[in-house]
Amino acid sequence: MTDSEAGQPEPTAADPVERRRVVSASVTLGAAVGVTALSFGLAAVSAGASVWQACVLSFFTFTGASQFSAMSVVGAGGSAVAAFGGAALLAVRNFVYGLALAGRISVDDDGRRLSLGRRLVAAHFVIDETTAMTTTQVTPRLARTAFWVTALSLFITWNLGTLVGALAGSLLDTQALGFDAAFPAAFLAMLPPHLRTRQGRLAALTGAVVCVALTPFVPVGAAILVAVVGVLFGARP
Image 1 (cartoon, rainbow, N blue to C red):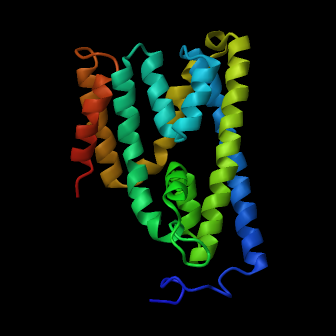
Image 2 (image 1 turned 180 degrees about the vertical axis):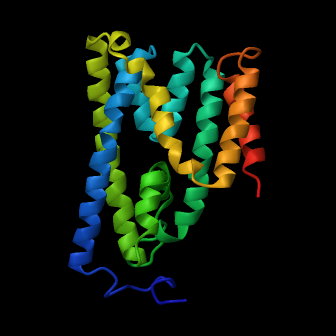
């Protein structure tokens, strides 16, 4: 175990040049991904949500895939229970991320454990982007810098983007402009990276077959929840 892992200060862990590099990359990522929130705000209004409902969902959920999933089910006429179920299943991965990041972000630069309140705030920011930026850093101090800068940058741009998109959507005919296709388009954009392996292709095929087979017989959104079982079966080692 290194001194930094034991909670000791890291005098050479993050020199100013490296920290500036991490901050720059984190802010750039936050701004780039935050642009996606514009489409979420527009599509949420298109699906029947109000401006404040779209903004509340972004503020308290703050995980794009789950938000898109919930609104796509609601927009298709599904129940709130089905929307919550699908969103919660997608959010399970954040629990795994939290386990991976706990040792890096649960202490401050002096090695002291963060208060419960700060750990709860950090948990709200455990998403794909913060995990990716944090785990690529070579030292705990740089990892903490990457996590918090990415989190704050993305949280600000995501919520502002949602607000601007929702306001624009409330003034435009989103159906006529085709923004109702934003949700399926977003999920299609997420699919290609998962199809690069045989296991990923098998999981996708199994889930698709289950979902299509059940859609005519179950309430809107329920087929997606059941298809998760098929995905897990297809993705087994």
